[in-house]
Image (cartoon, rainbow, N blue to C red; front, side, top):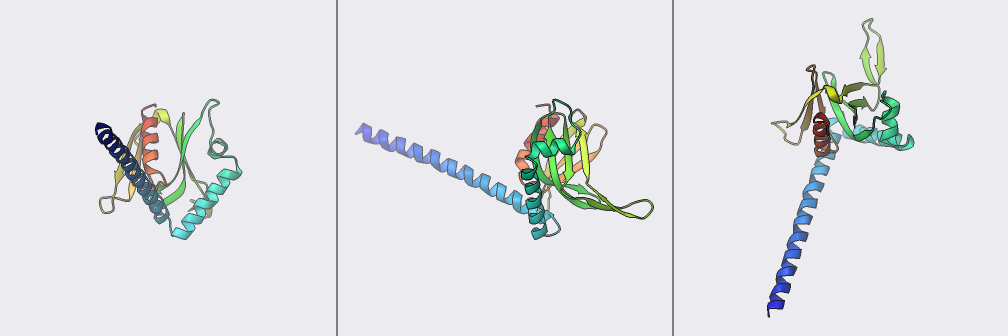
Amino acid sequence: MDSKVDAKENLREKFDVVGRRFGEAARKTEGIVGDIWQHLKTGPNIADTAMGRIAQISKVIAEGGYDKVFHQTFECLPDEKLKKAYACYLSTSHGPIMGVLYISTAKIAFCSDSPVAYVTEDNKNQSSIYKVVVPVAQLRSVTPTASQQNPAERYIQVVSVDNHHFWFMGFVNYDGAVKSLQEAVHGV
């Protein structure tokens, strides 16, 4: 009789473990889907944003991966290694700029997916790739935050030691980006 009770208890425990794992997987999937939807909604329109992301991914594949694109796009130290790359937007006074945030052993760097248009001092239209680079040693803080009106709109504020503030948003993998940026600011 005890062996039947033990077997039932063992089976119940195994189902509990499987149930918890399914629940955890469902929560993670829901979070990822929410991040992707927020990323698509941040752009000027969903179709253009999706096509821009497809073009960016195609470029990464054609050029041999994020590591190669990073080293071609930014000046790097000889022993510098790319840790992570995240599709996101940089918030600017002219609106969000879609691109990729790179986190390396030496810096965080953002590069727009396409040239950004602007008007020069002599009133000429120009465009160029938008880049931001902050050495890891110059990072003061990383603060994850969300909009009070819409908690699905999540941001990451990065502050440098010289008090420059950078707001990143629309991450395809928000939680991973927060973790990686916090590790960078703490030298992990």
